[in-house]
Length: 479
Ligand code: NAD
Image 1 (cartoon, helix red, strand yellow):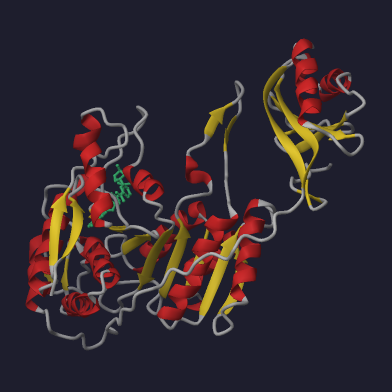
Image 2 (image 1 turned 120 degrees about the vertical axis):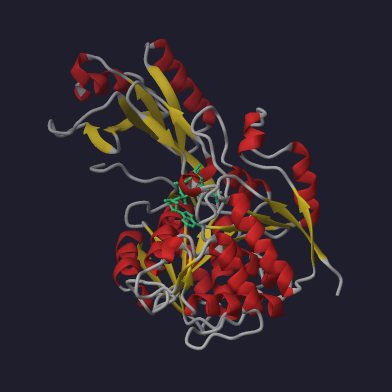
């Protein structure tokens, strides 16, 4: 069979140890693979490349389209960018898929029947890194949720559930609070769910959803959720299943895919030869499925399950009474290789199938977008932060096109008619709305010019639009 060429990155900390163990198992399985090795992580950061990825590595990664990556250490501060976030965004890896499964009684887990998959959106939400310090006291980050980004991830979750014979897809958001951003994610989930009548679809608010994952994960199956919630939830779920050392994750895009363990570079145990290679091996198994090598993937997975059944466990999952041998990284890989061709007796063998990526629908007819006002944000720290004083000053900026509707502080209305108890920072949002139709941006520019001349310190503005007559902005609390 023709060999498939993939890219390897050995990473930092325990990365090289678990990569070598994983490659030995891959080779012993006879999987027809050829490798190109690229340099990423600490050594590249040290040379001053802020992305942590050597420039010539990109060509190799792009050409091979499949990357098996060991964990890397991200240096704190200093403008260094996370390699993972860069790879996910540059390669368009929109879906992060993390199966979280218990292997009881061989690996202790609070939830012996747990078997769920988290499909996390991988490129949007709060991970764009668009952050600003705006005033002496206040910082902000931009949370972006798009229609095409959400459609892609939600469709992928349904396609995955169908391919793997799963019953249910649960969407988790916080749309009771973030009605526009998380609301869009939820709405698109409902729209797409209709196209999969064979699958049960439900929505849970992320807080109660997380509680469900912690208390009753067996009631969940496939979960689809925006980036940040998925990031947190998948570590919680992996830990509940047994150990963060056991799970692999897949990052899927239309043009490329990246496979990695879910844990980090574990500097505390690096070089000791005791790390569990299972996370990276599980990632490699998912990679084989992606490459159409399901037979080899199943053989490795079964041999790995047999090793767990035989009580050959690395320190992180070793339990007196449950385990038979405390294995080093290399012992563990040897045990898997010895068991290639065996099937587990009690743990359920996996049957792998590749998952299609279906195209997004043609974008809906564009809505009619009308400018109806502007939120002008100010830094202001005078008069004991008395909102009435600021209100009168800002009201003086009204003209025949734009009129002050309210001022809020951290989202709570403080003028007109605020509560004296409301805590006030130095960051004020002044909402101006159009007095009549036909507002143009010139009206906003003129307002800003008047505010500037009046000595007010403008931080930024957000235009207020209606889409087909419906507000495209949230009301302030108490507005
Ligand atoms: P970590 O996952 O590296 O370690 C957390 C704990 O789990 C440690 O006690 C560690 O010893 C243990 N552990 C992790 N993997 C293990 C394994 N395979 N076998 C046995 N024990 C294991 O998380 P951290 O300490 O928060 O992060 C360390 C570094 O890794 C940081 O620089 C972080 O930025 C980076 N990181 C990288 C990735 C990645 O490359 N995908 C992911 C997460 C963190």
